[in-house]
Each structure stands twice: as structure tokens, then as C-alpha cells.
Length: 118
Image (cartoon, rainbow, N blue to C red; front, side, top):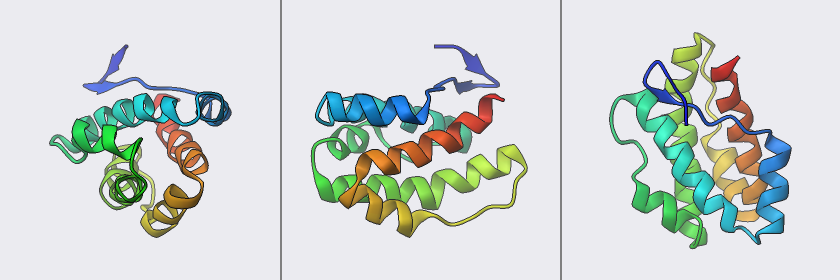
């Protein structure tokens, strides 16, 4: 894993995240949650998402909602600050998608993370 300005590189095509999530029946999302938590923790400079929450988010639906809510509420503002873009609050959207369609929520998050590596 390459590190850019102390931020671990985790660039994936959002469609690959969706396909791997479907093919592995969601098991890929446990790995994906861990990698995403490392990126957002590095962006924030402190632990926003613990690895324990990231693992349980892949296994337990309510924790998954919490994971995506924190990504939208705490992670995205740091991401947009780093990218020097106007922040937008997507926490409720991600939380609802995280409950009903977690792979779609993961695609949205991955698309935003990929902006770091352009």
C-alpha cells in the first residue's frame, strides 16, 4: 500500500467495490471498511473510525449504519477540507443506504476517496 502525504492509498473503482461485495456476499466489505477507516483516520489525524467498528460494520447491520453515518459526518468533512472543496453533509443518505444497500453506500464513499489520488 502506497502512502501519499501520510494518507494510505486505497484507490478502487466503485464498480469493483460493488461487484466484489456481491460476489463475496458482503465479506469484501469487511476488508473495505478496514481500509477506508485507515484513510479517514489519517485524514483526521486521529481515530475517527476504530478497526473494531469497521469489522463489526461488515457483520452487523446497525453498526454498518453507524459506520456510514460517521463516514458522512466526520470523514467527509476532513476529505473535503483536504481537497479544498465545499463540504456537503451526506451522513443521513449514507446511513440509510448503509442499512438497505451497503454496497451502494460503499460505492459513493469510494468515489469520494478516489478524488484524493487524482
